Image (cartoon, rainbow, N blue to C red):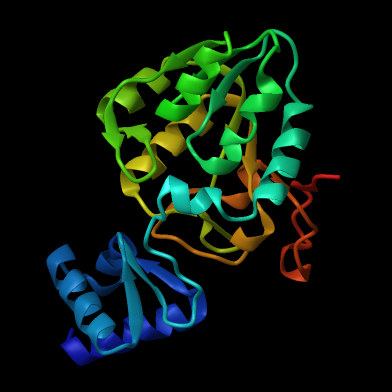
Length: 248
């Protein structure tokens, strides 16, 4: 297939689906991954789409590829995050075996967990430090430490999480949209989140209202596979999802 024809197919698909993956395009266009990646690079440079990890999104999507630091995120939506975390804490029962994801919203859950008879596994170094200092039983998974988010990622983290069986898990997200689901900027963090989610009986995502409609680079779960706790009712775009809980 000629290059211009491939461009037309890619852009038509984006117009309908809003996102495409390299794997999807290689099958559809019967082209190699390297060819598809060159096409996406060319279309990105021409301003026709936004190239992301593993594919592309439409140019008018609210896409956020960069990960703010923990210090930057701590300044945002603090009261809302505390309210969400307080609601989530009420879901925790004695003897729960909990996975606590890295992130500032999940971090606000810690003060409400202290004193509860639970065991917590986390990939967040600061979460583990604070929980241990408060006398809680906490297990920090091993792996590579990511500086920006202070989260442990990598193959060792994934392997250790596969052996756990959590009663409840509490996760953060950078974005939440209907088609792309729950997203995060880093592939390695996405895989850790996905692995931990699969090990949880009950799965909760703590998500302030500014995250709705945003998209980051990598999807780690569809919306309908978790319960989402937020600070206010999202707009009618998300009305079909009965698993979105407004903390009150």
